[in-house]
Length: 151
Image 1 (cartoon, rainbow, N blue to C red):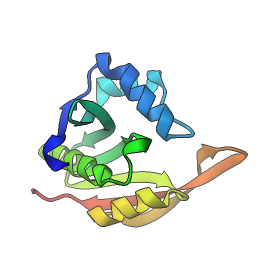
Image 2: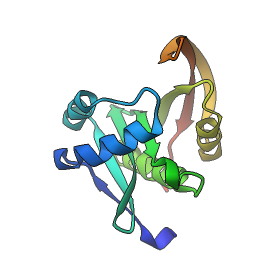
Image 3: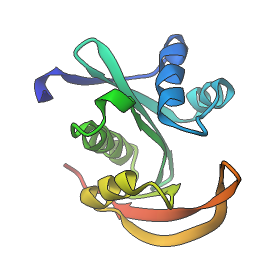
Image 4: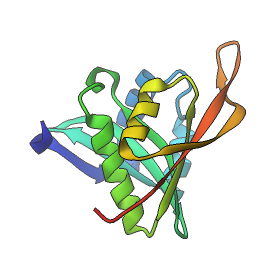
């Protein structure tokens, strides 16, 4: 699989394909407007397996602090190690932009994402109460952090 994985920055022309994956993957996906704003301010990377777009991720670096804002793998491509490949790419890009520490939030119920971040080297450092909308209420976010190193 590894030889067929590639990455490139997102452009506005990619928006429909990105939204299709985003809406398939999440109960509360990012909207078209959020992605359009993100394209102006953040780095958005697309991941391909051969010619097929299988995921995307969004990072923001302010001075030396990186924030992972979104990481998404197409549901039918999950469970194959692609999330880790995408995370490694995003963290390498954050490091190139002088990011030395990365922070992220995730839903407290998202155990597969938690395991992915832990495997990469993230540690849980806090909790934000009622951070995420969910059916019938709100859900806590776990806050995780990781020191970034040159590969």
